[in-house]
Length: 314
Image (cartoon, rainbow, N blue to C red; front, side, top):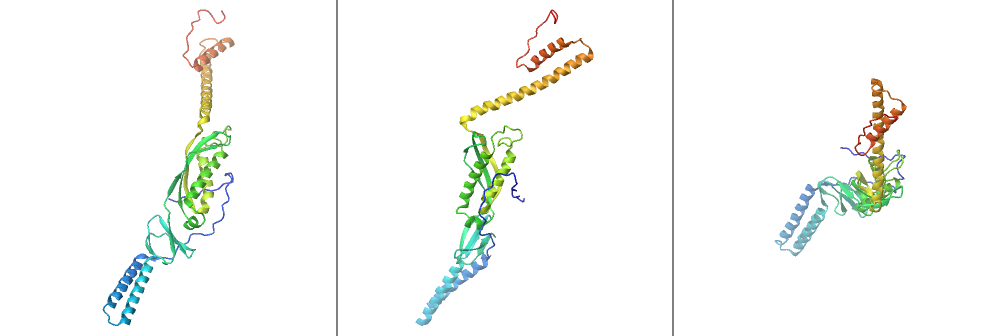
């Protein structure tokens, strides 16, 4: 499955400007390690054989020459075998020769490179980083708590090794910075109906978080696969007050819906009575009926029937 990079749009938050990378990943020149291992073993055996033959030679000069040759052959074979590398799936080797970047080995298995080079092991597996619960102020100044999890992996090994000091710590720090920046850009709950909020527009805010994270860690050769908020709540010191506010809003919304339904039921009742000519209703009787029906339909308690033995006007 292909992974699409987040697109930076014009309405995205202010993006940090990271320096352009000075080095890009290239493939290092390497050969299969099986043949190199075979030649190395043959060289060691040849060196040992020359030394063994030297013990059978009587001449001092020839014996010394065979011994020296055998030692040199064995040392050369051992030095050549130092260029062998075992690369597991999900790993890579960054190759340097006297401080210069010579390429990256990504092909798994036993590989051989110049034994004079240094090889840095780096993981290209998918990782995740979960931030601690951060306490910040939202766009309205309310203290909130939030945490996020980021799924990432190293895409460019050369940038990860040479562009930053520690790419794992870099991702951790930049993730926390991005989460804090997103939190102060948007409110927990928006007062305006068309405004974005952390709680009401989780998908849009998550997309903006992914865009900012991509801009922050791209210089380190890191690819952001997914980012999600795992914790979002008001801080404890204002949680009770905000809960009362949310409860009040829910009560108002429920009352509004009840009133809207009651008005429709009253309209339907008066229309049916008038249509069937059950009773003649003047303006006062309609007002009394509307009042009684609204009390019955909108009241929190069951209505108590009252029997009127007289008339409406007595």
